[in-house]
Image 1: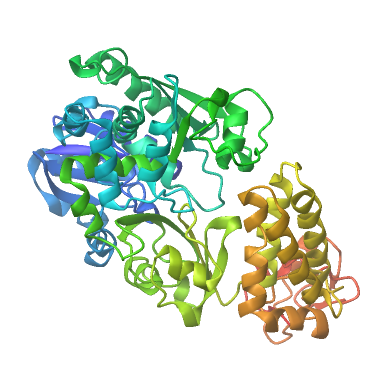
Image 2: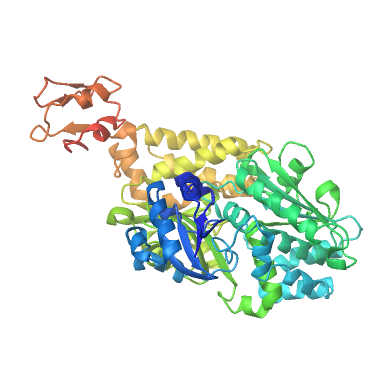
Length: 579
């Protein structure tokens, strides 16, 4: 058997590197290798046992102490030795309910080996494309109905065609891997786990538009992704898939990486171009669009990682097969980063048309600790919150847009009954206000004014008319902002007001936080019958608001209490509660 250790960022953070070293130290007779993220981040570290190309057993939440049993199982075939860490049938459903195209090789192949990619049909699509015209390639993308997976869902073929038809010999193909949404990690996982699928997709795109240079703009906070992509690029050049006369053809195109400094606004394509040119990342006025005047004012095409990861599959299998999945207006599959108050967090790829309920409850397993579902935030800080009564909304650009949310790049943050929706709106707006480039007044000043109002409300200083003022500011910013950051920044506020107005009213009128989250509106009390007088809460209280004799019930001085909750976290007897 082969022993394969998952080594995406999630696995390494959970200790997969130590697990690998512990197994290697035993000098196993079985082959030892690595793979990327399979998507079941909640079960990491993950170790797979293979017999040839067949998966025999998946082991989860593995520790260094399990190394001996794993080696024994691989060398003798005695799987009873690892029965205690074998994946459950319930958890296996996480993957069996998905349709994987962009993630087809993630967690399956060795991301550091080009031969592993080629063994799965890698670069066959590029070989096929080199016998086609650029127009024929674009036509297949058109038939597929592939929309840009960066958020807007704009037809990929249209952007490619516009760049191809623009006059000039010097053209550029750019990959936007500046994945900045809180809770989003789809692009990172693809680059870390299947970098050659990005390279192949980009080479097909470059051939289609006539570009001789391709650039991947990736955030510097993704060091593992950068290392693995650099390694894959070097391998591709050595095998003739990058560089001059690719695969013996007349097509030449090379590729390089630009590490971005982590500005969220550089996810907007024209701000990204400005950054590539060595300028401050600030959006340009459009038109002209990048297809006419992009990088160095030359025709350029920009798509994100997930978009390019679909391209080779589409060209190899035909556009019709991709378009057969999904809905009338949204074709194919979509990858989501499922996180928050969910039992099974990780990467999910499902056909368009799947409902939010299916993703959250069937694949994600429902809400952690079986609490009540409250809302799901889609599209990150640019998206909106979809409440419980809209859980049967399908994953479709138009359907999600009708709720006030957006598809976005694929962040899906689940919230439970203990989530304060006003606090959540404040959290996302705080992010966008800080990330605003400051070029246009509506975004630069408008987001700050909104944040000030939300801060007042969460601190118990809200007043009548605040909600109406927020709505007015939201609409002004959406209409007046220069780029997508400002135009979508009000979405979390608008959707929480729309669906959770009662929480805003409770904060403003009753000076209470229904979720008991906002510190300025929460007071804590000690149950005298449960309190053992251990004094731990008094020692931890930063405001010295708790007093009492040892082994006697303690009390909290409400005039001193700042509502930080440290006492609740400290009490081992459940004697302290919020009201």
